[in-house]
Every structure is written in C-alpha cells, then in structure tokens.
Image 1 (cartoon, rainbow, N blue to C red):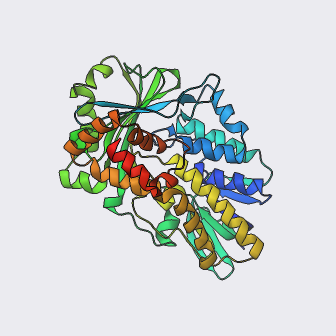
Image 2: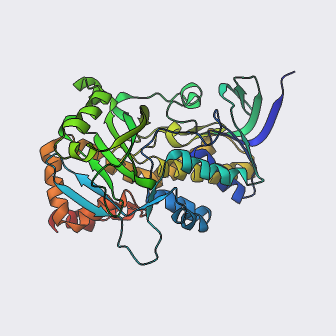
Image 3: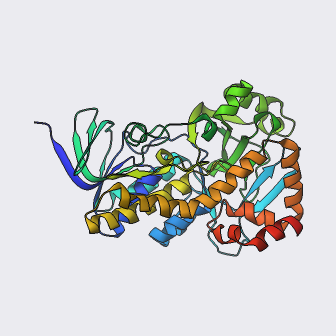
Length: 411
C-alpha cells in the first residue's frame, strides 16, 4: 500500500509565494506542508530585485525581517530606479527621500540567497514541514480534498492546496485549466556580470527601453560584491512577430549599443546566460476553485510594465493564508468561498496591474514613451505614480481620485 501524508494545507513550491503562505499560516497557528522539487539553496532565474512590496509583506509578517535584510551582506539596499527612454533620456525616480539610519525601501539579492533565506525561516518554524527533492506529477480532486502524487509515488492529501509551482505550473494547467497566452506572457534572459562600469552610487536599478525590443526592456541591476544582474525581457507575441532571437538581441546590445557597450568593455560574464518565462498579470484570471488557490507565477501575477514578480508572489501567499484560515474555521473549501481570495488579491493588485498594462501598451510607441519621460521629468505627480509601482505604497486611492489625473495632466 502506498504511503500517504495528510495535512490541512499542502503548499506546492517553496519559493517566495509558498514560503510566505506557510509563514503567515504558522503565524495563525496553522500547520502546513511545503513540497518542492528541488533542494535549497537552489538557483532561480530572475531579475533579483526585491521591491517595496516585498518589504511591505515582510513587515506584516515580522517587523524585524526587513532590518535583518538591511544588515545582511547578501542583500544590497536600493533607493530607486533609472528609466531610459528610447531616446536615451534618463528619468531618475527615487523610491522615497532617504533619511539617516533608515532601512532601504527595496533590495537586490540573488534569488538563490533570498529564497534560501526565506525557506530557512520556514524550516525553523515548528508548524511548517518542508519536503524537498520531491516532484509532484499527478493531482486528483476528491469531494473531501486533493491528492498529489510525486514522481517517486509518495502521496499527499490536503483539504486545501496552495499551488505555488511557478511559471509552468502543472497544477494551474492540469487542474485549474489556466493556459499561457503569448500576449500575456514574457520571456526573460538573465546573465551575471562582474565589474560593469557606471553603476549608480545609490544602487538604482536600470531599465533601458530600447526601440528594437519594445514593449520590453534591457536591465542592469546592481548586486552585492561588485556583481550585476543583466538581462532582457520581451513579450512573447512581439518576439514572434518581430522574429527576435532574445540571446542574439542581448549580445548585440552589450556589444554595440552606444549607451551600454562601453560599460561592458572590462566586465566579466559569470556563468551561463539563462532564459525563463514570465507569465504577466495583464488580464484577470480565476485563481481558485474547490479546495485550491493559485499563487505567484502559477497565478500569472507578474507586473507587465516593471517585471515585478517577487512582491506580488509574496502578497498572493499572504492573502492565500488569510483565506485558508477562513475556510478551515468554516470547514468549507468550496469554490464559492475560495473565490474571496481572488477578490481580495485583485482588489489589492489589479489597479497597479491594470495601470502597468496601459503603460506597457504606451511604451510600444517610442515617440509616445519619449514624451512621457520628458513629461515625468517636469511632473512630480507622474514621477510619484511610477515610483509607487516599486514601493510599498498603495496607489488605489490615487487612481480613484479625479484630482490625481488633473494633476497628472496639468501640473
């Protein structure tokens, strides 16, 4: 007879979404089991930026955690973002005014380090059981829960499954019926470099909106120890239509772009160039059903303009934990009750995702984006709105206020 592990809450994937869900459940006294197909620490292809949303979620979990990042040499504090329009004009957007002895509003860290740091918090919690090197191959829905079967034929049964198994989630595809759509999907390519010249003295991340890859961008993010995460991202349908080879485009930019090539003359590439998928949150999807919720990349929540993924993933894990608590108290795991998760999460994230999708469409026209950057350089309201996408500020109230748009247009 096959062994079976039973739990109230089963979390598939131990990345930022899954670890956050487990930690918030534990804070409420609810036990959970996390299953991950790999062993930590493990690499995860990503831009490595930890926005203010990450800090916001950590503060809600435990106010000491952000300060811990601030004092950890594997985490680099970042104070803003530099946007470069297709014209080359710079829009410098500080996250907020820097104060003495204040923790950074955002961080940059290799995902291997950040994910492992978060998983170590989970491993240290007696309410959380972490099962690694275990790949789930099959799911079966029952009246009283969901069973997950691993590649090595271990069975796990739960009243609630929180699926956090990434951009190519087998749970989302096979049980939730969510497909990846080229118009709402992006491919990213990342490489690590050492000694890239001209890095910002306040560790601003850089987004270069180059004409040939719009509505995508080329990025340079500083990392601890003189390293940099360098990459390129572009929407899947645009790549296909323009017949762009992302690796060739990346290498061409580094070798020939007038504003970028000189910075890489003495830089050293560390390791391989790696490709990854970015399922964008540019449309609403059904994120839950009987006995389950989708989180993180499995829920396709990546910001279509900024590429923000980690903060939205952790936010979804937090909301999934809150919904799981309600369902367990009521002993009700129906799709009707689970849908409250969708409503709460989209209430928090959709205004930003919708605005970002509009900006993504806007930057597809170089002349228009050049105008926006010129406008933002003289318009504090627009600059502040862009800053909010990276910070822990909630822009919902502004977007509902007609005065915001008046100031945006005429200030």
